[in-house]
Image 1 (cartoon, rainbow over the protein chains, first blue to last red):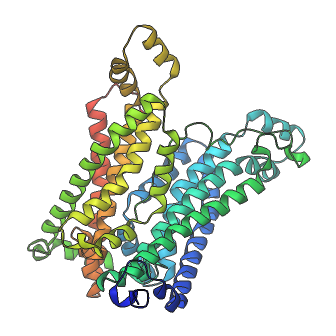
Image 2: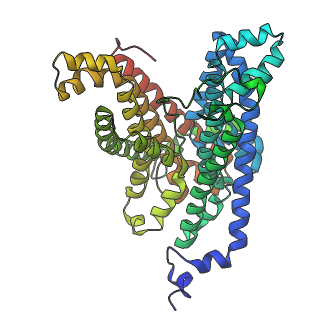
Image 3: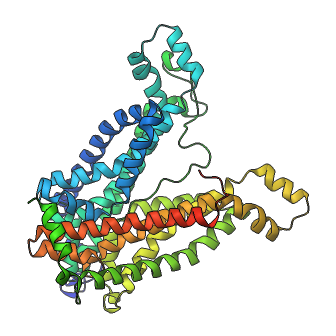
Length: 252
Length: 222
């Protein structure tokens, strides 16, 4: 009897809620996943060129790093609101805001990864006749991958959390379920959506960890280097090596 | 005139600054809630982080707390507080959520800062006969200061930024100006509110950087 009336009794945990609203929950989760995914992918696409630009010397590094850090300081609710006149009430608004936040973490990590490529490795590649493009694509980027992926993991986890704030414009994935449920004091909905959100962040983190292991087999101790072109260089993952300065956590 | 111009007009209008839902009152709420939350978070996180760093234990704990802090949405936590009995406790839900989110960066930075102190310096101090407490106060703490301050700064900015989200569950603070604008389709007010919040966050960041430099100018900048 108690189990049947958990929606009426407004219990925190209510399986009836999950089964009766499964469609709504699935839709919100899917929206959450694609908003996060698109934001992180665009973030990577933008941050790699920015990091390459910042690497060209102090003249570029200061403005690039300064600007991306400054953007991080802007509160999410304010960011989404400031972009409102440009995009209107759309998913593009939320995605743009999230991309801007992810840049702070991604640019720093890509830069750290590229700078950790040992100079003798570069020299060797040049000696083998690699041009700048091929050097970047076949030597530097693969070696920067551990740091890059570490950044992607941090950015993804905080983006999953931040997406909820997008509910202010109705594009917040699971946040869309949380916001109205607060007004009506619907406990089961708030708790279920919140838990799903945290689970999503954890699953995304684990998946990316798997991707990181698959893509960078040479970083694992004991594992033999698989591909010949990579066997020459096996630096430790720079961003994750001993006591990293913790990346800032974004609110929301 | 663009939206920014209209937002400026909104800000220039004195009527918008007065009263219960005016800018001054909201700003007061925002600063009060942020300051209380930050103070509590410091009181909790700094001693623990510094002490664990001094002992050299609990590294996994510090990093994990930091990671969990990143994964849990403040908005969800606030929402959970707001559907619990806490909803009638005034500012308490906001403050509690803010404390939860300020603790991870403070704790982690305090811990990492202490651990990053050059081991040979610590050994030398120990060899000179310094006791644990002397080592802590005279060697480790000054050397870890930059890192701890970085944590304090990101914690403070995070608190100010997060206090905005309180408005989404009906709590006070500057975010209310934004949400009120949303509810009345008043875009200039939304943008004006956003500008105010962004300005406050940047101001806090700037003030802490300045305070840091003024207090101990000799410290090496990182």
